[in-house]
Image: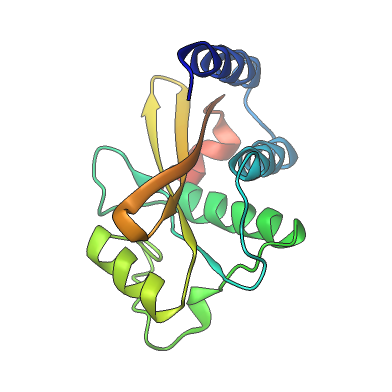
Length: 170
């Protein structure tokens, strides 16, 4: 990606992220932020409509083995939006073979990512992290091709942590 395009994209993301931080998002606004993130992942990427995409629970950047309601909810929003955009999203929670710990959801470690991608013939996996700094939550999503763990798209955004969404951090 040319440097100018990368810098322009980062500046645009920063502007969107800072605008989102003006006030804590309501439930509807949080959904819209996650939908916009899913839309951004699809820009410039061609996906095969016959092959599924897997969605991993977003994890805490400081402890990649831990998630929260926020991580699970964001993954649900992204899955719904991609599905509504015509992407075949494989629902892993319905599978008996997939172990899911209630506190962390369907976490994806790199070996599991490869194994699950092969098992489900997935063309890509959405992975993500979040972290809290003061009253701001920073989220980073990536669309990854399992072959070689190649990141083909990414999107970052931030929002203010208000009382209503603070409960999502548990």
